Each structure stands twice: as C-alpha cells, then as structure tokens.
Image 1 (cartoon, helix red, strand yellow):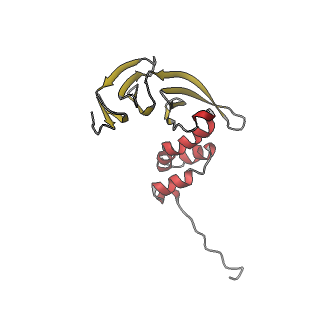
Image 2 (tube, rainbow, N blue to C red):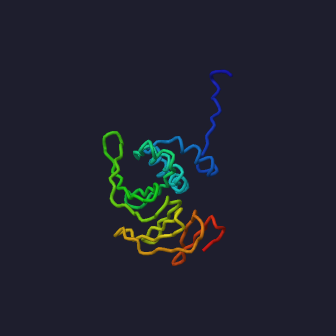
Image 3 (cartoon, rainbow, N blue to C red):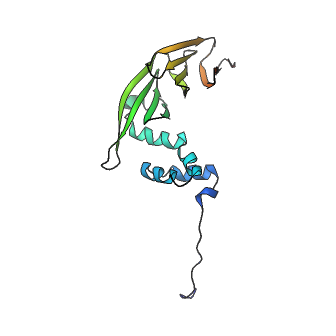
Amino acid sequence: MPSNQSEAKCVINLNTLPDDVLLAILRFCDTKSLSVLSRVSRNLYRVAKDDSIWRRIALQRVNVHSSDKTLMPWIQLGRHHELFVAQAADVILYQIRKHNKGGHFSWKPLMTFGGHQGDISKFVITGGQLLTCGMDKSVRTWNLETGICNGLYLGHTGQVHSVDCFREVIVSGSRDKTIK
C-alpha cells in the first residue's frame, strides 16, 4: 500500500459486544482498570460488577490457608466496602480498605456468622439479613447488624444446596429433591 494512503482503522465499541465477550475481556483487567471501565457506561458498570470477575480478584487477595485450598469459598461483595466470604461452616464479613500506595487492599475481619454443623453451600444477602444454607440440612437467617442468628429452618432430609429470598418468602432447594 502506498505510504500516502491512510490505513483503514478498525474501531470496536465495547458497548456493542455481548455480555459473555465483555466478561471474557474484563477477566483480564486489574482492579484499577475495572474501576475506570465501570465509569465509561452503565452497560460496562453492570457487567464489571459481575461476581465472577471479583471472585477471582478476591481469591487472589484473601489469604487462604493451604489446607483449605480444596474448599470452594463463596464470595459476595456488600455495600460500603464489605466482602462476605463463606468457608466451611462460617461466613466472615471483611472490611475492604484501599491503600493509596500502589492500589493495594487490606482486609479486616469484622464479624463471623457461625452456627452451621457442616459446610455452608450457599448464601445470599437481602433486606438487611444474611441467609445461609448448608450440608447440615438447615437454612439460617442472620441479622447483619448484630451477627445473631434470628431464624433456623429445618425440614429438608438432605443437604441444602440452594437458598434465595423474595420479600418475605425464603426458598430453598435440597439434595432430597424438594423445594421448600
């Protein structure tokens, strides 16, 4: 091509890409880049806050004892720089602090929600409460302010693997093939 002709430019608008492609791209970004990209548009903000992206980053930054590496911790970001991590029979609430030097973060444990007799398989945060379910066949509700368990729900005959809440209704799914 002659040097006096301009080269054709290929411009890709990130907002036109499907979510799965955006997620694949954003998984390569560091926290600073994710923060900058999330300010570009509402669509990028929505995709950048996906748990799958932040779970990887949190796992890199949270110190997990080598004997616990085989356990799959469940992680969820909360409001006000909070991180909830479920590992074994506890959910631990951490305060996230960013240090200006180098963009490093530190984690300070604030509260532990413990009471299950087996591993927690899932948890959700909704309406000022924490809902947990576990291998001990129970579902529990916790007050986020006090850390006190304010509800214990038994009734499944198998391990409870799923829990969710809509308004006042709690739904759980169990290995016993029932939904309660």
